[in-house]
Image 1: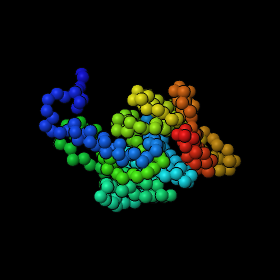
Image 2: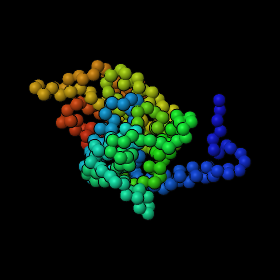
Image 3: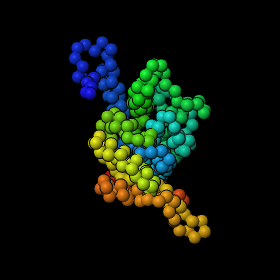
Image 4: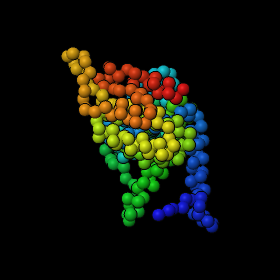
Length: 272
């Protein structure tokens, strides 16, 4: 089955939908004009420490004196704002919504800043065929976060995506100048297979995968100081070899042993 896009519909567009979409994409471009690099952080599955890595990277980059922002695009399970010490309420001014400033001056925006404590995200979609509308609404929310939030001038904007590859393709359409994506995995074979699909989605969408970070690559023995395996498998190395992309960092459970990942220096080196 083939579908026509907005631009392929002939006749008068009485709804004005095409002009609205074009105008909003133009606003995204204008909002991000002062952002030097937009980088997505993705995974194939949940529970691999993607949001923790995003927050750690943001702190590390801020520590180098660069200006950094974080958009938590995991709309249903947002965690980055709390990890970065950002608290609401959100202020809306003449030029749009202002991101909340968290630890180390990091600019943050997230649905967590908009929801009442403990309340889930709920959409006002039609009662019939709700599952069809939900994806449209989620993409629309991401577009608004990019077009209506006054990010200002940033060296790097990190976008913490929900698990899977769908939202990454949406992001690529909204941000043609996307610098690339970082893929996060844990060592297990199950994670490797899941992240493999997300990397393939990125490649098919023409998105550069900057590299792979393998989280929970081991744990630091408190008595002997050695790093021992936590999960069986070598997913990080396997994915790097399969797709010919760099393994940027392997981070054990002990944060004291993950200084390179925490510094964010490797990401700045990749971005140039």
